[in-house]
Length: 610
Image 1: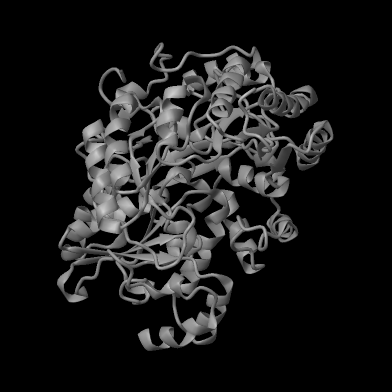
Image 2 (image 1 turned 30 degrees about the vertical axis):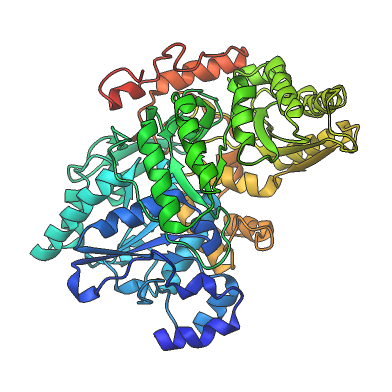
């Protein structure tokens, strides 16, 4: 098959997506390992190779002499056409062996619009896409990642889900699998045993019953499966595994740089933000460990840029101790230092001065809403005074561009709140021109980027409806009509893709047949504008007798059984209800370092978060 692959590579765009052999990729003798894992990212190579979680688990699995983990990415349609024409099944980059030969086929679930790519990749591997039709112990299909917090739409296709952080639990499940493989156990025997490992959810061991109105009546565990499955976390970030090498791609990828994770979780509690809740509690790495890992990665990869990654980098408590050390060696080695995810309420002239030592580029902040009332409702805990102060610091420091992230159609939003986005942008433009030290001959550019609110599981807004597509489009038009200057560039997310995202974010098992129907109609790469076909999706829903608005546009009562209620991500439902009720009153909750709000996540650490 290797020669056949070589023959078709000149016939496709970017053959580097499929060539393999990159610097730091890991090659092993298949006869010398006991278990082979095909780690699949259900999107194109350039996106998947930018994903930090895949880099971590790739290195972790391959540390074991018994395991060989290889990478797989969704083939672009031109490559899929050639593979089907020449009867080439889906293959891994390292060995180019067929994915169907592997023990585990693992998928990372980063966004809902990649779900049909998972089904398509299983078909390209020559495997039945439904879990019940794959009867042998291997290959097993195992999924993890943030979208696993509501795995129900994928339950028909996946054998097991890993909930939460995978560094420890994945190796526990792998050890169990090797024992059962040696014993000659059946697939069902292994899955029953795996379900006893905390953090492992086996959907075939749960039955779901529904009321006549379509809501869930009960989720019932079978064969000794736990009533609730609790996510796993890593307790000590400084001592847990982190790779000292990344695979370096031959072609440019989305985030083509080294990345060092500095902490997990978020102290803020923005009520729309799923990541801010499902990654709780906050756990930080030491500044020393971050420095050592950053240098090792730059030395092993040759990258000239390193990014400090987290949900809110400027909330790292040791940032002032970390930056001087990083800046010293990064300046010496001509390495750029990137600090994404900065907060306006703790951005300072001192921080800007340090950032400008390595690179001066546009700054990005996320006010999320245009009025103070709505910022309070979503618990952004950022005032307009802080936004203007931050922009003033940036302009006085020589910056001439600012990018601002907002969300449209947030709960309680009015058209006045929408117009407030444009009005805030105008005040920032005016602020720039009042700066007596602005660069001569240079104008300001304020970019407003508006996502569409999607209600997500395990957030205070998980019960809230999403605005209909027509209402979203009305608000987008109102925003554009509210702009009064060409100094503001405005862009927004597509309403139809956001609607579909909301359907699957809060969906249940009945959506599996819709995904199959959509795949049969050619729906793949749905997160790519050139491939997304809303009409085909609506045809699939209609053919299956399912109304997507039931999932996206319906307000849910607090006593309704939600599809993910049998999963525990550490945050108490009672806390989420308190928070959404405070949102209705535009009341804020202090962040975690100021006052514990009693979310419940500290029980995962066995003590206080701070």
